[in-house]
Image 1 (cartoon, rainbow, N blue to C red):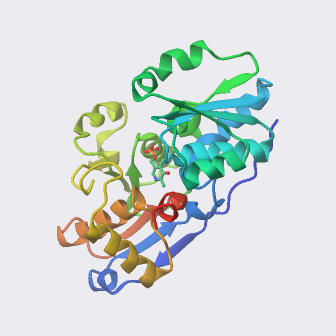
Image 2 (cartoon, rainbow, N blue to C red):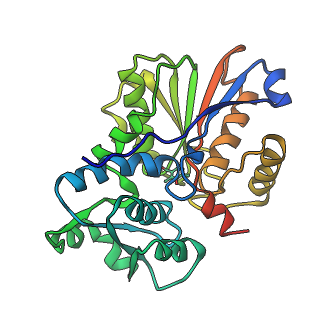
Image 3 (cartoon, helix red, strand yellow):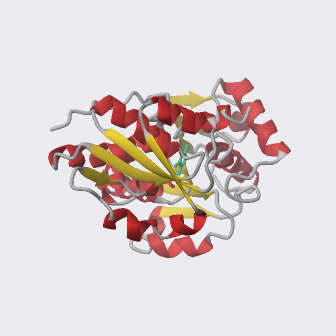
Length: 286
Ligand SMILES: *Cc1c(COP(=O)(O)O)cnc(C)c1O
C-alpha cells in the first residue's frame, strides 16, 4: 500500500485586539503548512485517491481544473512525490501562468480544452480513460476526497469551526468528521461563489443543527477581489504573520471577523478556522 505520512498541521491561537475585546478565542488549523504545493484540503482530498490508484496499480493520474487550479498543481506535485505520471485537462484557451508552469515543472502534461468541451468532462473524461490511468474529479471531490478531510478532525472543543466553500467537499468532510468524533460545535461554511444558494440541497443529507452556510461573503463572486479584501489580507498578514489567499481563505477569515459585529458568537466562545493554503494563487497575482 502507498504510504502517505500525516501532514504537519498545527493549531495556532491568533491574538487580535478585536478578539479579546469580544471575549472570543480564535485558532487556525494550519493545513497550509502541510506542503508548499500539495497544500491544505487538496492534500487531504488527494490522499485516498492516490492510495486507491496505487491499489489498482494505475501509473498515471488524470484530472481537471481551471488555469489557476490549486488542485491541478497539488496533483502534479503529489504525482511526482508518490510515483505517478500526471495529466490535467485545463479549462479554456492555452495560457501560461506561475501555477501551470509549476505543474509542468513537476512533470504534468497539460491539455487545454475549450470551455464548451470542459463542461462535458464528466462524460468524455471517464469514457477515454486508458487502462493504466486513474481519474480524479475536479478539485479532488467525491467520497474518497471527503474521507481524507474527515480524518483531519480530532476530539475538539470548539464552538464554531469555519472553512471556505468552493465545491463544498471539504465542508461536507468536516461535518462528517465532527459527527464521527462526536464533537459539539457548528461547522460554518463561507461560500465564495455568488448566487450559490442552491448548493444547500447538496448538504441535505447532513443533520441541519450541525452546520451553517453563509452566502453573503463572496466579495463579488468566485475569484473576484476588491481593494478592501486586499487590504484585509495585508492587515491580517501584518498582525499575525499568516498569509491568506484572495480566492478562499481571506474571504472566510474576513467573514468570521465580520460576524463578531453581527452578534453571531456568545462571549467566551472558541472558534477554529481551517486554513487550506492556496498561496500559490496569491503569489501568482502579486
Ligand atoms: C480548493 C480550495 C478550497 C475549496 O474547497 P472545496 O472542497 O472545493 O469547497 C478552499 N480553500 C483553498 C485554499 C482551496 O484551494
